[in-house]
Length: 463
Image (cartoon, rainbow, N blue to C red; front, top):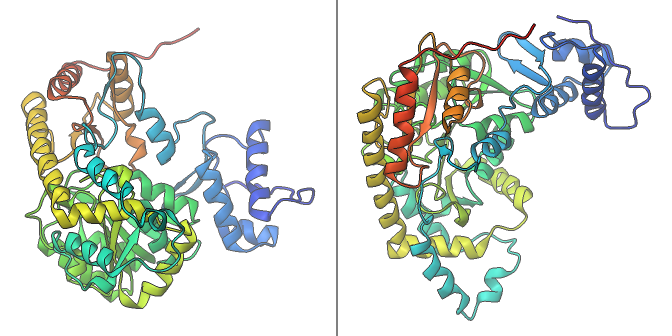
């Protein structure tokens, strides 16, 4: 560990920002070398005479900017300039590569019209309503009882039955995650996640100055004993996609869900269960929420099952946390997109939302089956899903595989986007839902199958 100590005396910026600026300056000047282990939060705080929270916030911001990389159990390290940024924004930018001929297997999204067939008529209908001005105005009060009832119906379809008055509505799942983290944690707290996880939780935790703790997985998903260990070490919250996990595609069985709920109770911890893919496996066991309703926030978004443009998610929040959750929700958006929520609720009430998710589920099953057909049994689709997981073994490493795939015209999201710490296994996530049709998907998978059959290209050596 280095004895790095910045001089903040000349800076007029807030302390955390001054620390970030000093890291950037010393890295550019060569006074900080990539790979250097930074001082601990507590050590640097003591020597700078600032709070531990200030250092935690500075390190989190520096990590968001790609200057540092935190590894649970090892420390915080200076990153190589220009190294791949695992943040959600960088992932989306890279995955949106539109170069001619590229087959996109990077983005977790369904192909097609984004439910325009169902959303369009509702928007046209709303445009003719006499209360359109009201729907377009700022709305600071709670949503209507009808909206909450529609949300309760949506959640009940996923096994999360609760009274409408306990349903919160947010502008998408990312807002729900941020609101829940702000209620359940404080800066510096540890948030446990799967060792390969959704990039959005990584961005949220970094932004809020919390620390990620990777939890090992096996073929069945999260290992309950490892979740217990993370709680014992001080993790305040576990974030998980328990059904059709992103990116590993696993679905937790009921015994694991019960065990995780019991562990949260024993350690006075919380669970944020993201039901983003629950609709793809309707026969999955009941949410963790059922086993510990006072310890679990369950959220379900319409972004994957209906349309991302609706910006609507429904959230089950324990009643004691509800006032603070609503306050955080309001602080994040001021006013919810009422007209979009109204459209979503009309689609739930009239059934077109459920019709659309049924269509997507059938297409996902066909595409996951196609991936197994082309790539063989090593692919882990688990259930019909938008993605499959392809484990890799030497001589292939995921970084090389992604790079070689790009040369062949196939775009894959970098595995580091999902990894937390240093996972034991290696592999790549393939978004089978993203190509424009099954024929384009087949071509992309065939290219990857050929790639698996040969060794990585040797690195070029310059003399």
